Length: 487
Picture: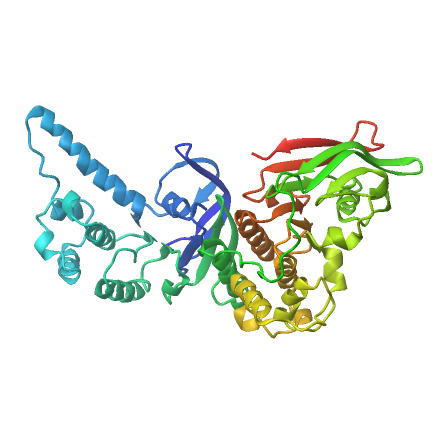
């Protein structure tokens, strides 16, 4: 087989889904695992290799003529085609359905092997039964036999192990191991513990794109990918707050933040003016704008770190600014993560203690923690896929891993408002995906309003539905504000 090359390929699937700008090379001798979250497009990518969908752009070469595909979608198509034969009833013709042997014969190029596989998978008593009357696992076996006996130049298997009994699963895994010496394979799997040993590369699909292609022998990259899959594909919940460490209750009928006709001015320079903004409980916002547009100043009005917060009309967490409240009465309701904080957090304490320090709003841990606080910190480490690293020094972590731990630290008290100021700044693509996946988990928890600051449109987060943009006016002298609802 020649190398299969996809360069900037986009494929449309009847307007229901679209793969965009796919760059992928499958070299001879390589076997690929395709993985990603549900709905990410991993099955679509596998099906595209078999000719499914309409290629609308990009260059495509080296895809062989004989590609065998086994997938839920192809399985459903076969069953639906059999059901349509019932329409013959209107002609007073009774349709008994296509027998299993005919389904196999339609694609089989090695009948001796087909007979062997029929016996090995226990289908001999069923070969004359209508395909549509089989169980889900039995129809999957029939499709596997058809694909394996079609003498494919490329074998594409989408969740091939689902629905198989224990003995059939063990046999198929061994059969594929032997077959891999002669036939290249692309396998779609959700479970990393089922990945065959012969897989050489992993492709991670996200929202119709292919952001990561990892060699299985690259252990650090594979470790990051496992954690990304852990965050995006596992049924994980954000750990609960400490019931003994509850913040003072807020009025549920009041917004968290209400800024009215606000401005920031320095002598002759107006950063922004006439800004109105309200953040309701559990409402998620993305804040964006060019450098110098006032994003940091706006955040500091909310946190109380800007001196002009007292000359503006600002209501935060039940307090009208300038009525005698302390800055700590405001900050107790806020979790905050930024690059500046990460620079300041230069401590060698273990990861568990870094997360626990969020209960005390301290850099480092100087107070005795409770058993409950330690247990909650361990739950956060489990969510991050870092359970075995609880005592590892924080300052020995990669830049991206430190960012993840600091987000957990900011969230450990379940603050009503979590401010993430450019959380992906300085991260490589894999760590950026990890941070975005964690933020999506937090948004989905429906307990904390997220204020997410970023520059890049491709870093949009599912669950953030509101967008505040600071943008220069035509004269370039100050910034005016635009509110849009994210699509």
